[in-house]
Image (cartoon, rainbow, N blue to C red):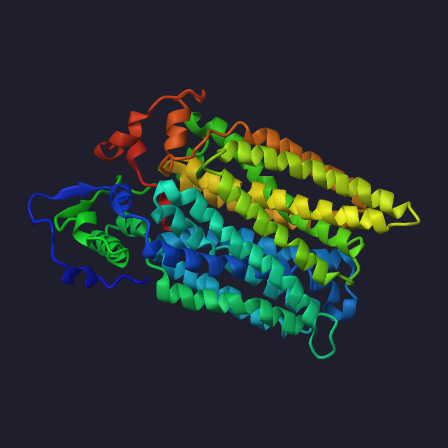
Length: 513
């Protein structure tokens, strides 16, 4: 929803112009009740999330069928991994571009990149060409998660966790649709990978169009660039869409406060390891190094189990893979129920624990199945294990992403998420090479992945709880200056805008996250 810059002027002004009313962005957003504006952002975010999912999931199906199935195992795995490496590079580009040109413009460019090269990739006749195209698709994906952060920015903290998790339904839908598109196109005369890639790129085009029509510029970025009136106009327009009085949200004399001058990006990265944040960051970084590795490892191991392959064959059981993906819908539903009732920390920890046990059970079950003459009972048992394992790993990883949006204070939140997305992309790339490692059997891979999952469960217990808290308040209440976990209020956040010290500077990555 691009701001109309003057649309709020038609409403009767309920605040007279007097002495300036000083507001922070958080003050203004706190006055904006959840309503149709947020629903529009949720729909936009859902379209972008489904587009991202289908672009990624396509990489797990078409490589074995590309070039007539003549690719080596390593080449097929690299065709999957290159998308994640493109995302790794794209995340850093998007960070710098967003700071200069704004979050909305950067999202549109990235969505256009993903759409264009997704379609062009279907026309590539050789391995080198498709590798370049998939890298560029991944590069675009590095900036198409902006709607997730828009929701985190705009949605009131009482509804934030549940709203962000609802995007998981869109991801689950993409996980279900993609294998059925593979069923309809791959290994079909006249169709095959080109048509499959075309179809998987259509949601990216829809995301581009929807972003152009719906997505506003980030008020935080506008504020960081001194565009006070434009930021106020966007907030007032949001109030109008929500059927609220725009002048009650941002009075006529309102002035949005800036935290101070913008620091350089490299100084912002070093800020992550300052004493007061160091312990939390050192717990979070390993989690994000493995979060995508775990999710995509589970997806591939489940695909192989259901199809009874070792990953190199192209005879996927597309129907049953699609059915197993319905487990993600169940996982999101449980997460939405539990996140505010049970809490972020126990929901993640228990889900990782159960998922780890289940994936090890799948590895052992495959080994039993390979050594029995009647595998019907084993096959049925394994499918149910796959369904439940996918449900719990989806539940765990989605809550992890939501939790870490909330867990960090404004000073370092954006910079950390750039780092986290980069690490997660590397984990996703690593997951592609499971079965091409010499001497690695399916059961060994499953057990290793299970052990990593159990260690992640233990690590999540070190995170502070954030349910019902505003963005960033948890760390302020949980970590003291010497890095020790406490339960005190941090008055520094309250006085941040009135100080001119180093702590009052704006995180330069606000424009990208």
